Length: 255
Length: 222
Image 1 (cartoon, each protein chain N blue to C red):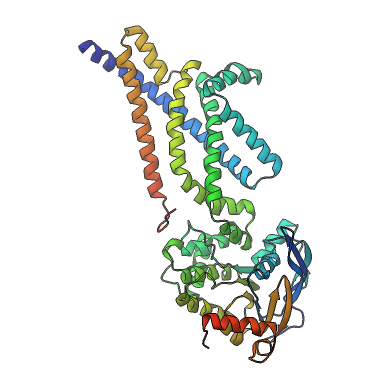
Image 2: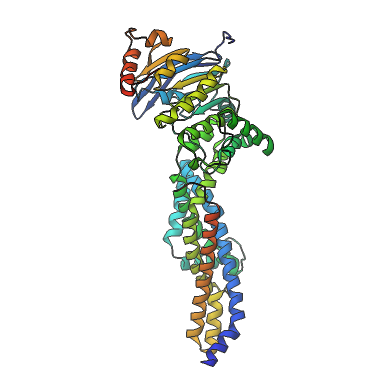
């Protein structure tokens, strides 16, 4: 894995107040090329808001975002759209386009945003759907797919844009337990392939084995950060460890 | 009795031409309503405060004033004031079109608001501008969900088109009235007029049902 000194993504002092409540309080971190950072923490901690502030789906009240050393001027529409193309986003509830089949879900942004012609977009979409194991489901519509399949289509849709980084907002939280594995295995392949990612999740086992760094958030602040082995080992004595052991009990997770 | 039938038979080609005029009014008005209504709905959901206020004013005006008053107001008043010299047919289309636009905008607005919000977020996250997202993602779905309400609006505008008679548009009602007053066969002629409206309603609603089935999203139950 090549690791340059300049971070691919740098996020500084992100603040967001919603409804009088401080959701994010000066959050900063940076992401090296090929790195997988995992955001954990109780719900309401601000993980989802943080991810959506990074690509300005929620405009932060304060703070800066740099991609490859360039600060994003989110008020300039052209810059904003160009930036978002380079940042793939995966949502908890998939957000597939309901009126388009799997193939068109992946192809539409290629045609409308990247201005590819119909055939090139189609070929690329087929390749991406193949990659997530859905090569035989091209013609099916979201309502005809299982949750796990929908999430894999949404991953293919993001990958087709050739993103430099991916933001994954609890990609398995809306899935039935038996469908989580197929989505995690796609994410695992991405991590091994060197994709730079930031992942909010409650999947502690997955975090232990694959995360390069764990960020533990609570009340809009990153209160702990470090290697998974340091933060999550049985006698680390950290807030993260405490939180995870309660999750482990809840899900009786086995490695 | 025989006389009645022969009057209707003789008048039928004349009345059917009226049905063509009526269809022209309705298709024109629904078309104007579709184009204006979609823009107003999008503006009402995504537009700025000034635009929303303007659309609101428009909708309240056309919902609050009777169609008959609107026809007179525009044909004998506002169109003339604006220096437009419109035929009764064109004026009927315009006034009914502006009226149905107010109602249609609310059909589309409801459909847009019923869509899960996440799809717009996903489109934005892919780098689409809001305009692109609305055209490629939001409207194709919202328009599908609008077909039942639109079909209802069609049947209402079809019947409102009979009011165009008062401007002298030679549609079904005007022609029936003309023949009835000449032949004194009021009852059979107005029954025939009623039947023509019924048939046009039925044909239109059926066609829209077919369209609804044709563009239905597989596996989707809304």
